[in-house]
Length: 354
Image 1 (cartoon, rainbow, N blue to C red):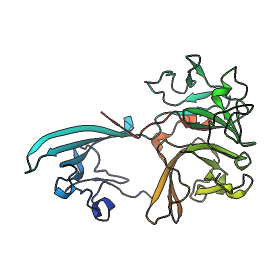
Image 2: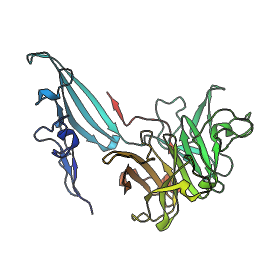
Image 3: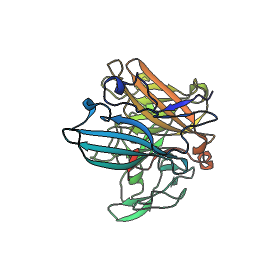
Image 4: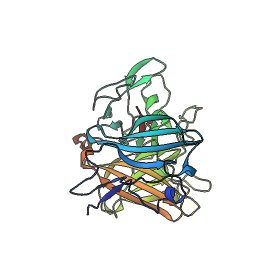
């Protein structure tokens, strides 16, 4: 069922073209199909122009061109070049500035929970304070003791979440959230996060999004998008992605608190799931946009009990939720077969400039 994928190809129905924001130059874009690709061996492939052919598109007198330079799978990046031409009245060119940037893979590094309670990292950041090794213990920097130390996972949790620089364990049996930094600190009086999102036993700081333990019972793993909790649950044809609605008037014990947004089983991915994670630039999907045509989207990474690594993209519109799930053969690793819940190892932008 592999179809041709068109990348940056001229489409008069593109909203940016309709609104006169940009144009596609002749020969722009490329195709990727099951057997061929015109995207390979690229050398400065034109993509989009702003103001080059239409003075009304110029921004403060400047025009812009963006080129696709190379697709580099071994580095998990796609390289681009932007060209800015600054003009003065009369059409004289003042200067041309060129900048290179790249869009990179969406999960640069991930922290995984091992069955023995350790937390390991998949692809260490070479610039991190506490580097560690690939699939070795994931060390964190303790700001109080000013040293690198390993996480401690307590309470028989099998899930894992990341939120605002902190890591949390998750216990599906009773829906309990565990603060892993406190669990790693011998002087901490508690490592359990209450439903008031403070540490139980006198915590004063809100460290996690609002949640309901009863509503998270038997969920396989959780992840945080913005300040909302999303989860993967069920198995076989009932497997699905959902989110926890903690809005006004929603009861923790009410089944409506768990909203299904992507039916994994019905879409052919009827498996049991061990983990879910989401990149930091995903958008909150609830409430649904009110206006027709508006949308928000979130990307989720899923790990099955069998070790398959899947990517799901969920789009929220006024009419409801739609999702697409796929498996990229280049992202599979044998370590996924033994590890449990996981999440991103920090906040990353999906691109970087040279």
